[in-house]
Amino acid sequence: MNYPELPHHHGEGQGTAAIRRQIDRVENFQTVADIFKQLGDTTRIRIFWLLCHCEECVINISAILEMSSPAVSHHLRLLKSSGLIVSRREEKEVYYRAADTVRSQMLHSMIEEVMEIACPEQ
Image (cartoon, rainbow, N blue to C red; front, side, top):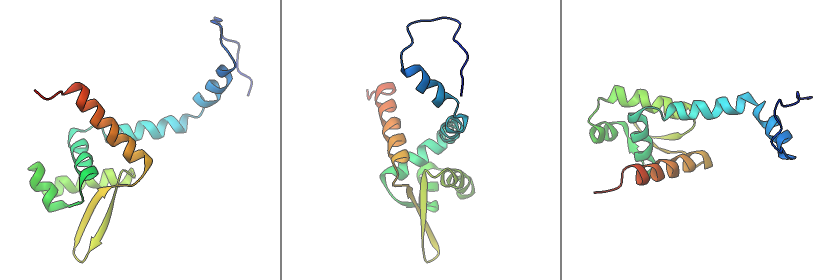
């Protein structure tokens, strides 16, 4: 693709072409935005963080967060559809945990880093 000449020249190097190619991949940025949208809700962050540390059923998650099971199920559905968590069925019970993916691990680390920086223990 031919890119227009930049109006100002600030000593752009060979990396400029690679950056321009990457920035044209709007679908990649949309994927990132969709993931961050999932974590734009305090309850979903809390549920995701919890499931990074243990596997739980809806009833226990509801009790821990002091929320109704239908409300928790709604958040779990959104997290699961984004690929951040997975589930397994054992007879009538469904258990949830964070997905074993680089994406989930990275988001978990990011949450913990931000909490450490922004919320130091008193």
